[in-house]
Length: 232
Image (cartoon, rainbow, N blue to C red; front, side, top):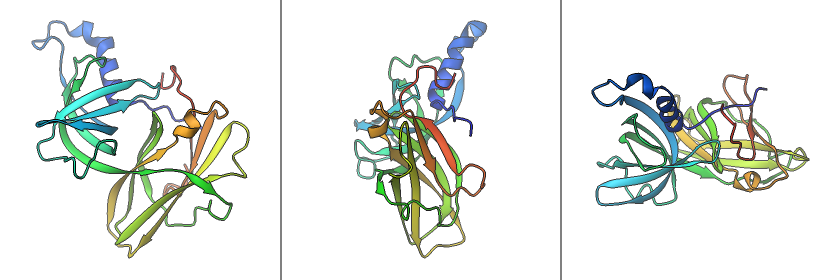
């Protein structure tokens, strides 16, 4: 299966603007235009008016962004250090080496999952399939936006298949169990903490197994270490 090559939408947008801005110098806003974006972020802190986030590109660069929270996000629901999936718009002529201002349009709290050692019995994809609409690796996380059946309660776990994880590849199995499932669907954001594998020089790839409804991509492959050429 082809290796996924995904960068933060924010970073891709600003880098693309940098490459083409010289063509738009006569624009009344100095070549700037409004763009829409979406990213998995870490909540860094709150001020009276703003919320601060950090975004990590696949190459390991951290970009700081901030937005007026405007009641869309609170420190009670999104404590410092938690993960979230946000959508926003912003002006494109901003330097990613400085805090980037965005206008927050929506936020979805992400569940952070820490992989645990599992047996072959644990590492099975025998739960109802779901749809993956967004996936990628940034920093120490594999991020997924999924559509699952609404349920009275749902748990997520991720198992390390010890018997398969030999040499340079670690095999992870995503598992979900739900009570009182309904026919309607909801979006959920998931962040799998793969920091121990990113920071271990033994591993070159992370293979994530899950029961994808498409039945074509039940294994997603990601590079374990940072790669400055990743996504190019």
